[in-house]
Every structure is written in structure tokens, then in C-alpha cells.
Length: 182
Image (cartoon, rainbow, N blue to C red; front, side, top):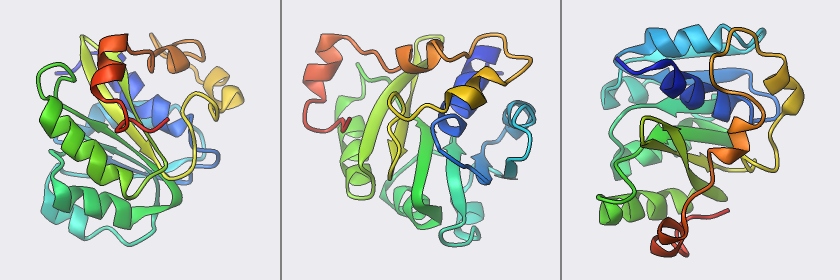
């Protein structure tokens, strides 16, 4: 089971970056932890599905403001994310290690680059990283501070941790130069 840092970072970074999320899609085999984090956002609806491509196929086009996913993402899955996201939507998804899976990550980021304006990896705890890909909003410039500050019951995430999570060492920045879009 993932720890509280992972769950808070996966959910709140995306939800607190989108200006007015109304429909968040949670894709996970262990969605209860994500649901617990979403309950901290009054008035924001969410839907959950299992981490299977078949379930994603049934999600309506242009229906999601934010997608938070643990589904392994190949080109077909990435196309489905684009299809279900609204024109200003954003995706938070897990990715393999930035150090060890460079070619796989570059391919994922390149595909997402066809659909989104911003692609940025960020720290989600325990040495793990996630990827935020956004059609409109920048995760450090467009953070919704009043939403971030109004959240109760958090153990890790806050308005200072949010932008700091996107800091990467120079070796990562150089390796992904031209692919990370910020």
C-alpha cells in the first residue's frame, strides 16, 4: 500500500492546479486512498474506475477536468486520456524512474506533448515520481492557493510543497531537455 505522501501528492497537485475542476477521474486498483483525498475537496465530483484500459474506453469524451491515474500508459492509453480530458484538462500519472527508464519516459512525454502544453515530472514521495501533463494550466504558476490553503486533514501536502515537488536536479533537466515542457 502506498503511504499518505504518495496519495496526497497524486491527488492534490492536479486538483489544486486546475482552476475549476468539477469532474475528476480516479484510475487505480486501490482507489479508496485517492477517494479519501478527494473527499477533502468540497464540491468537486469524482468518478473511479479500475486501472484497466477497457474501463477507460467507457468514459465520455471531454468529460474530465483532471485524470489521476496509475494505469500503465502506452500510446493507446495516452490517446484515451486526451479524449476524455476537457480542453483545459490535466493528467497526473505515475511514471517509471526518471533515472532508469529514460527512453520509455521520453516516448511517453513525446506522445503527451502532442496533446498538452505542459509536461512536468514531480516528486510524490519515497523516491517515486509522477508526471503532470496539462492542456492549459502550469502547476507552479497556476496553483490555486486558496484551495490549497483550505484543505483540512493533510499530513504532507501544502502550498509550499506543491511547487517544490517540481524541482529536479540538472542531470534530469539535461536528460529530458526539449521533452519536458514547462
